[in-house]
Image (cartoon, rainbow over all chains, first blue to last red; front, side, top):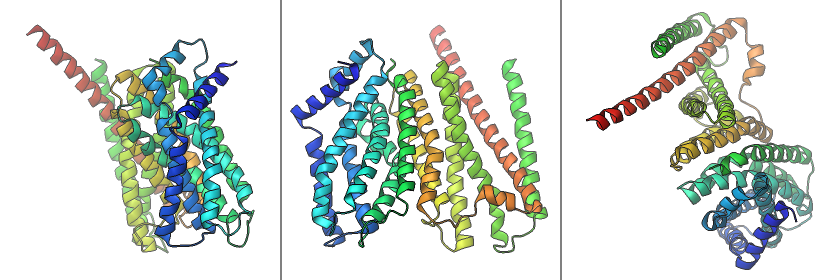
Length: 222
Length: 231
């Protein structure tokens, strides 16, 4: 088994046994939808309002997992073990980012149908929107893993990650909400600028995966 | 000796800054024609656009210093990245203020959310504002420097991407500097370029000055500690 596979399996197994992140994320998303239901006082949403409720809710739910991503490593000495192991340290970045993508996909499998049930008249736009969300998840995982490492090692901890991540994730929110606005339109999905938004998401993913790959090693030095 | 040489060049740089900026703003106010559409308020262009250009370039310079810091491990490069970000954040605050004044004069509102350049700049500014809590949340000096460098590189990569994203999202009403600079008449272009060079010199002088002052207070601390040890 490769180091990457071992670390990823360890993370997924820990999550399955403790269930610390995923239920909290799903519950957070559902509560936020309920708040929006009363806050906006609308039976159904479409277009930019639908995208504007769904995308930020998923983003804030993702922050919960990002804050907890390295807690076990810090508390149980996982960082030291990776430093001691004869493997490339960027493996930890790859494994954590992959675990985060899996958490986010699971969150979306739960939260998006509930959102559709609460607010959408027709779910036809959700299938192409799933592709948008997947690309956004990859970008979120890349920056999230990098910033989570920094925050975990600092004394500010939970405070720092959302503070740095929110501005850093704005391009992702713009692209995902921009695509969602047309895909969730009241009169059926419109693919006008779909390619542009996918391109922007892909570029974001590529850049921050490369930045993470290039700099992660320096975060583990001691 | 090296210090004396340093202060002489810093002084020369400061004099050059004052001279070029004075010339630039004299040209902008007395030689450049008044804008036909916007009238006198357009003069703020000679302040706002150089400030914004220099602030953004300063953040990119910080990312380059940060890469060199991670490569060499030399704290000198970290100090340069830190001071570059610091001065650019101060310039950035001035950009937001002058931008708001210009928007009020030209469009009649203090802030325009449909305006991608304004909004992108605000987002970048907010990101760099988190540099300070990040630095001060890490006690170990060496680790603080490394983490700050990783942040500076990430944020440096973010700057162009963010401008692209916000621009794709919104209609264009802000004058495009780089496309419109080509369209500026020569009588406005030259004063603008002199102001831009003056602003870049001001940024360099301030960075240099702060680096010198940091080095001086570091030396002072060392000497004081040595004195206390002997006393």
